[in-house]
Length: 399
Image 1 (cartoon, rainbow, N blue to C red):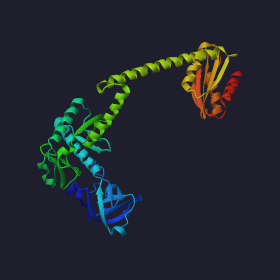
Image 2: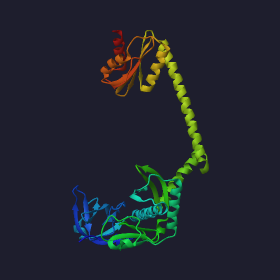
Image 3: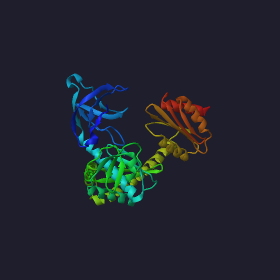
Image 4: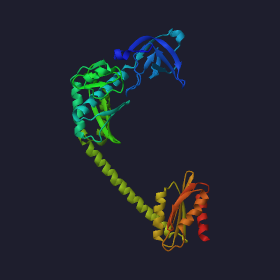
């Protein structure tokens, strides 16, 4: 005998008592119970499952498997104590939130269809954000505003929401928004003179209980548009969160709400100027350092070992040094954690192939790199000290 689905008789049932039909584990060892009747809604049609408790034991998931409703528990129930009779409690805030979001989706999708003949092809009810995928490749701000306004108009009118079990042969009597994917008797959710849609989810008694619908954003997904939205209490919760952020920004930037954008733009421009100034200072210091390397040398070979210096700086420094001393050959090594990195460069008057020199150095550290006759670089394992790698380079050039 299949489980009696109380959530279809009354979506507002928050607690109930019933008997256990059986208790078992699935193929993965997860404990579950099957009940004679249940108000727990299983995951279906884009709507997540209910959670709650059975005899104080947490219900973490509800699924319909092979025609039976399985209530998954953290731990099995003690049937000797329960005598197969149990009390169950639905997590009502979660359930009602799902009812608001799901009904809000019906209203929003119907508004898209009514105003612009744009059909909804899928729906996802997330923990914070809901989405619908629209069968269109574009959506304008004006269209989104009109749809949102129409949806909230339907909500504020507090229209009754009807549920009907309709035989397949009678479906032609209803202006369905979408052809049902099931056959036989179809459960219709009806908002009179606005939306007629086959659905197996839970819904409130009237549109007013959705309270509000808000489109947050949208983006293109292949050839469709994915719209992000929230309804009901989520609108208030997210509004409060964003207000808290605004208040913090007001204090930090010393600006009112309508001046925040300008204040942030000033801040970003200042940061951009500071980064430019810092880069100019770094470049000047690198050139100064390069001059020291070039003019304090005692021979054509210039080598130095650094700690924690990046490849980009090594390259800039090497180029600047050989620009100052055209006859010099510069090898710079950086010791970074368990790696060695190096750059070798030659001046215009120097006679050496930097690509060949880099190959010698890479062999010492099992490294990889590249370059040309003028400048080459690479990195590898720290198998030798940086000073030893320099001596290897010096020796290779002396041959």
